Length: 92
Image (cartoon, rainbow, N blue to C red; front, side, top):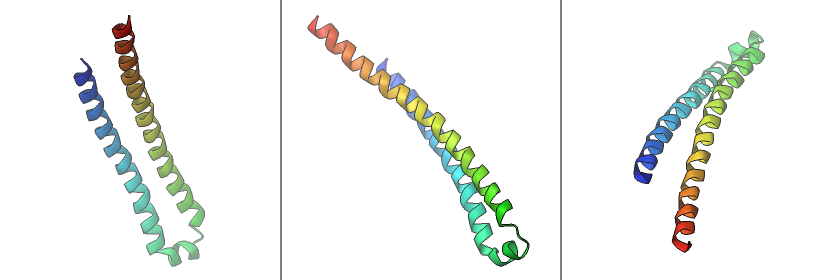
């Protein structure tokens, strides 16, 4: 039972990590685009708009990471629960 649980969480963590990396890649692309055309952005006073785009993209990545780490905490907690329950049964 425990191995199936660990395998399931491992697949879930891998997927969530991939999604998180993709959202941060979008943020990196926005920053790269802004820096590569910094003169145009500054000439058209677009730095505030680009900053809002970048922050919105980072927020998506942060929310994705929070979900991933929430499930990771549940997984670690369940693992610790199994460990302590098995010790309790052994000493009982």
